[in-house]
Amino acid sequence: MTDTTNPLYAKLLGETARISWEELQPFFARGALLWVAAETDLVAVALAVAEDDQASVAAWLSGGQLAKLEASRAEDLLARNPELWAVVVAPWVLVQERSGAPERH
Image 1 (cartoon, rainbow, N blue to C red):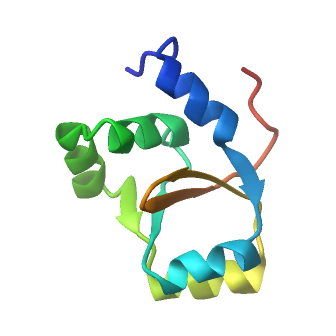
Image 2 (spheres, rainbow, N blue to C red; image 1 turned 90 degrees about the vertical axis):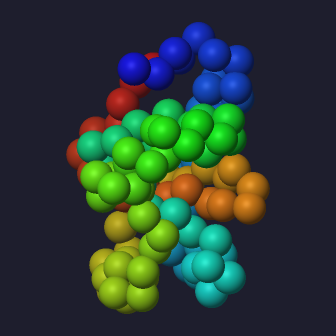
């Protein structure tokens, strides 16, 4: 479970924003996009990446909740233009598709 009182978690949450696929395409071209599954806390993943939490990141990678964005998904995003949210943890941009009503914090 993520400690949402962590100051870095709060900072990353504040830096998370809605973004269009068009704006993300240059990052995809550079191979810098990481896809976060919809059921996974985007900010918790960003925190784990920022803190070099190798165990958590490895678990998400092996479980399919985190992956480098592939060309087939990029084509799908281009065709559908869904609502996306992203947060930067250099050198990565973590991106997630959101659906339904926004969560309130």
